[in-house]
Image 1 (tube, helix red, strand yellow):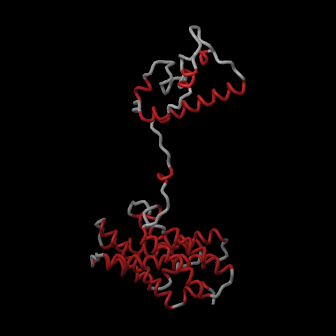
Image 2 (cartoon, rainbow, N blue to C red; image 1 turned 180 degrees about the vertical axis):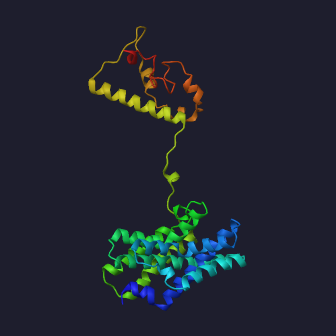
Image 3 (cartoon, rainbow, N blue to C red; image 1 turned 30 degrees about the vertical axis):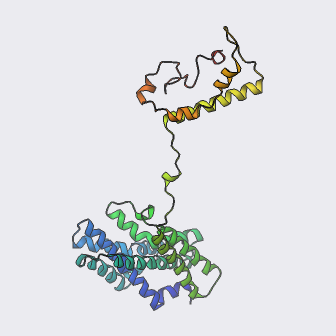
Length: 305
């Protein structure tokens, strides 16, 4: 018996699969309730939530009639979950924990089933892993799109897609190494356990804003000034240029040191100029955004020459 056949024919795993469909139907129905849908809306959202991922997988694999429509049980379970949400308003921490646990178990089971079926159909490794993840999270993504929300797998759910990918990779290794069929249960437990742990510990992938570096206008001006000053110093060092002496008197060492002083802290502590201040600055002052002389010190004879 292959792992694919074990996932489909084993009574215990099949029962978990159907329970997962019921749970997803309940979560879809709960969303329909928050959006004040009618009974038809409950049925549609619950069915898409519970069966959408598997239907997408089977359509891509071109297996004929999707497994969700090959018998009555999948549709019955999805509609039963949606009907439960329509009739019963389940609340409480215990209920929420039970629903989350069953959802995570179904997530791992669907990811393993989707990956095993894809590899058995002759797909390469990367497409098979992708379809495994799609089988696990596709129903929830379709549900969110139907109601006009950004899918939760893009950041709303803690490591759901990551957990499905872990299960898919573990399933691929089981098939690659030709391990006994029962070891596929370990792949399911690995991804499901990671999903439960991520929910419990509130783990998530880093968001884009956490990697951004922002600078105020004064900090940006200080940064540009430091870069230009460093470049001038490098050019003088490489060319051996002689310091320019003004017509009145030679600059003292204190004046030269003051010119080279790092003024980043002073600029960062100052208030930022507004957009109008930049646009209305006098030409050649080095302060206007649209001024070609930005960053130049017109009082420095060396720069004028």
